[in-house]
Image (cartoon, rainbow, N blue to C red):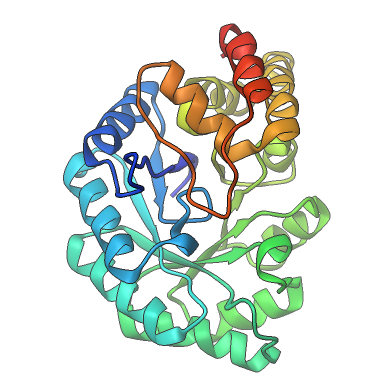
Length: 287
């Protein structure tokens, strides 16, 4: 498990049902771009705005479309352990390579409760498990000490999706837990994460510029830091524009303008503004 993994978007029809035709096209487009795997059903996929059955539909469709051509990580995180376990068992049945879960959100759980949530998912699924460390979204921030305890307690805990700007912590985890596979989570610091020891990266903008990040990863691995920096800077120029208008909305509009109809994000996300659509049109040539 390493390299560039696309945090897969979910395309919707005009009635907000899942657009399976576009999902297939998106999967094929990304595989052609050279990505190493998909992270399915995460924040980028709007999983938290879906029903349990819809999340299963996406997991199955992506497995059907991708087959065994790339690695697949199923995000099963939820507010309830039973829901997360149910999705993890379904991912195992489908043949996913690993599962992942964001910490249970909304309620303020004790540290022991959060740890038990992960142990329960790992034990029930008996699959490699990636902790999704996203303090900005879940309200729970993993520490190096807690990570070390969890990796020691259960060999099925395999890695971390580190969606945090704390790259010192990323380095500490790699030093403290040599077997931990750590993915950088923020696209705008992909190169920085790799330089601090990340084994790869999982990102949402890879949906439409996966080839750029594959090239960045390969340049870094081969020691061509100048090329890697150039590609990271190009990506950051695009991301900076997207941050002004809504990242997910811009990502979907970019892909729609590239020929893969993505539809709108589900409410309460607002539609992309006319100014945002114009800005997207103006940055397409940078991709």
